Image 1 (cartoon, rainbow, N blue to C red):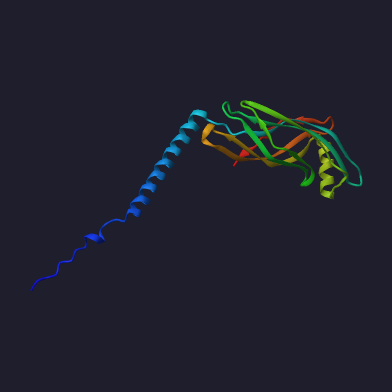
Image 2: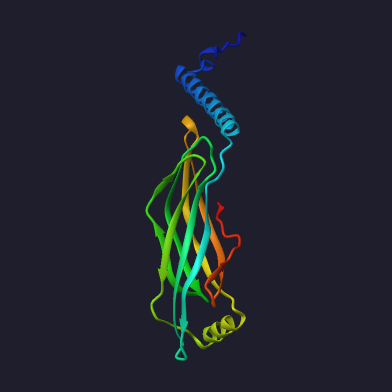
Length: 201
């Protein structure tokens, strides 16, 4: 009795399209690895620094309140946009900061998109003035205390978008977030310098 021998050789052949797909995937994988290595080398060579936004100086031009709890102020603020990269220009956009007192909004600081050259800075001058703002009893007590101590603080909070190019490797984008308190001597309006600069995320 003879056993019938089956030939499975035609079932083991790989379809040409499968080989083509494998080759294409391999090419893309190699290209991705090369691009990653090139980007890493470019980062090491250029060694970019994240652009920052900070308060350079300020002055309290006006601070006035009355017994009815009506509050008025005017503050001059100089904002510095700095690009510490020696081989790349930087751009700043979507800049928006809120100045407030005791959680009471006073004004918003905005700017149109702009660029900063390599190893350079740009200064933005703001003069913000509040309308007549009614204070709560708690805020009035804090204001009285500020006059007595000759010390008052305004909160500055917001963000800006930064971007710069790593040569031909593409661009890098970051959001810079700022949150600090600007302190002044209300009797003469002088600014008490303190660290007020952005952190990138």
